[in-house]
Image (cartoon, rainbow, N blue to C red; front, top):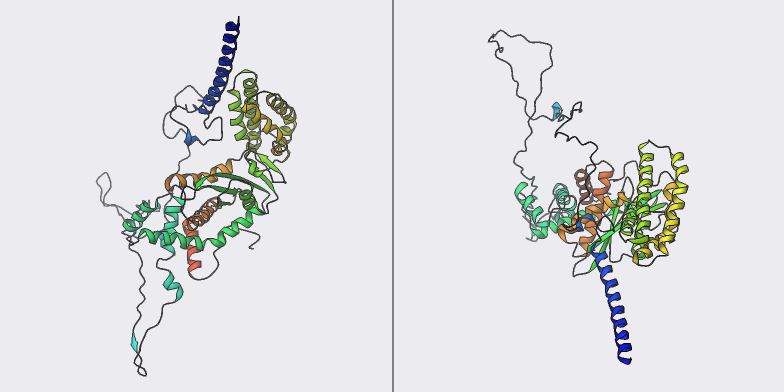
Length: 464
């Protein structure tokens, strides 16, 4: 009898161990299934085993490539006559019928233009310092160079091109150096190119402050952050704060509230973010991104059982809410109608989150955390100007992600300042529909001549 009891006890112990092992393996498998569709991971992190979502075909008929019937032609614009370098008059000699007796008509001449780039030669300015001898003491004298001439080997045109290559087009330093040497015939070393970046960062210091101040006074702003390497295996973060007309970037060692407070500073408008806790200190209006919530609910739907069914319904409700909000944006649904339809959907979402939070597991805990942030879920229902997603910040920070993938981050504080300022200038010029290369040239020219940089925000009331 004692032997049987001992065997039963041993079997019970083994069963408990196996249950714990099964639980651990299930959690590990769930973690392996995480991808960009059910978590905050970017699509670039998905492996080859992750199937790409297939686009829904509106029609079974296969569409032909190329322009469709009735498509409005987009012809290449001709350069104005004052910008044409050479004119070649082509006068017909004979008609296609063979007749050579031709006369002028009132028909306007047809114009065809070809465009080419001549061999590029840099403009070089040489300062010749003549040496004279003093008749009184016999010493040699010469006129010294001005401080700005001694400090600046490369002019604003060279600096702006370096800024475009390394700061906007995500070109590596060595490839940018090869381009400057080969395409522009400008002898430059790797150290010289880095010094150019330093000059650009100095020229954009006032621009950076202008954009920061501008964003602090906006009604609605988006914030986001992504990983960044700061050299010597030090982890850092690239933060962005943006609106529809400007964006500012900041590199910081922390992803917590210290960095978020530095970024947001005096902002008191409506802040749109993901669910990251670093923003929880913000005491004014806030909207949590529903694109992130959609991925969270998709992850819950894969849990199985009662929790999985709740996740499926939450995911479908999210798609319905975003679809209606998109119709408001497109003008196919009135704002008041949208507001009248939302209360039952809001109530159902919160009810489902409450049911899910009473289940067991990490995904249930995620639902409980989302429910605790319910005061930030529905700001876009109360205010028509507030979008339900943080897509604007996601798109802005993407430029920094591409930079990180090419250059692996920055190695110094000087490099960090360059990244912050040139990304800020590039993104803001794009939002302002301005030429980034023209602005960089003007800003570098102003810096080299000791005058303030031109305003980057057009019609900025603080500057006007």
